[in-house]
Length: 433
Image (spheres, one colour):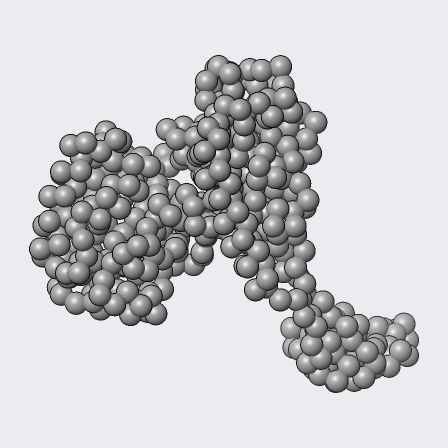
């Protein structure tokens, strides 16, 4: 029986009625008033009201000069890894046509979404890698137009490295505007920019709620809550590494859950001590420490099977396996956003450099969806080619099913293929009389 050595506090309701109402009002105002509402809410929430929210080409060009050249080199490495992995994903998706019956050829093809709005958050952290994930990936998929948006960092506008990352990733249009008003603006059209077909990207609870309310008007990637990390560890794990990985993800925000699931009491106890030691000098201790204090969990299990069961129940966004035989878990785990197999695989690599996408499901959504990937931007559609020979095979089964459903018009359209002169007595004027 699993023992909870450290339990989290009860999580308050993330999306309140007040948040829902605020988001609903902003979206309705932007839909009705357009840029007037976008500007009003930008002034209200970000104290930002430039002559145009579209970032000028000169400002984009100047952003590179305000971004350290050495860091830029490393950022380009990350961007290239994101593109490379997305290209491999794209190559794995096949289009085909196959003759399933004589005269019946069925197929599938992939059509890119025409336009995407990519939002990069800029609250506590102006994320650079987020632009790579949400802009470069749809461009690899073949999306023709990607509109990028992020909030202003200060009175001069967007964080320059974030702006550079958007441009370098291939954004076709860039707007400096944040929050719900940014998503609504992209959904309904912003300044001279046409509405997008889909919106992707992470953000705070207001951004997530905006995506939920805008779904249907536009497509979305997924709904994401506070980021999560779980480490599955046995007696071979290094408690200092486990502790650092838990705190590293916890620095995202004070409500970010961090889970340690282990079969070793010693690793559990030592990891807790290492976390306390790290927090004495941890650069983001105010945030990570609060997250660990309130939402950190340590669970001691009796077996690998029990660790597996608990992990699948929680379905964490990021799941690290630091055990003697991580492949045993990799073959059996079912619910996670992304999996890190072995001690040297860490969330940091995925978030910042290795190429897999870091827009992932949280709050048990991994039970039914994976994260953002190149296929999210492709509509997989089907085709049918049918000859007279094919009609001879499928018309009567189709008509019989339609009759059974009382959909007699469907049945007529099927039987007409077999006999162009077919006209049921029930519909004939004489029969009607």
